[in-house]
Image (cartoon, rainbow, N blue to C red; front, side, top):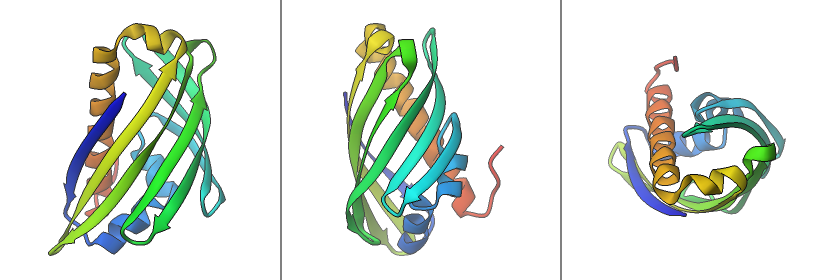
Length: 150
């Protein structure tokens, strides 16, 4: 699965960069995130519970940041295992462009899934992925603008 997108965030680029590198912010904004621990400045461990169609699973995984170019861009790569539900692995290139008082966040995601999740079909996986991405960016924007997540 490949997915690209852009999100306009009403916050300065430095603030968006800081939020994308803050474990507490990420934990609050990633849908279904139960835990997120920074192992090093470029390595994180996460536990995320998601539901895709009839399959609900808790994924345990590791995330690595590379190609760091603060506050402009980085590459994020990770792999999670969800037991019988399967696995997910992939990465994303993230670029932040300053546009006045706003930041344009562009991303290109490449992902691979296996197990029961892979049997659900590309259309369901794609729509769920877009929904989760949309929720993440809505929560991130709200948090950056001083709001609190529900």
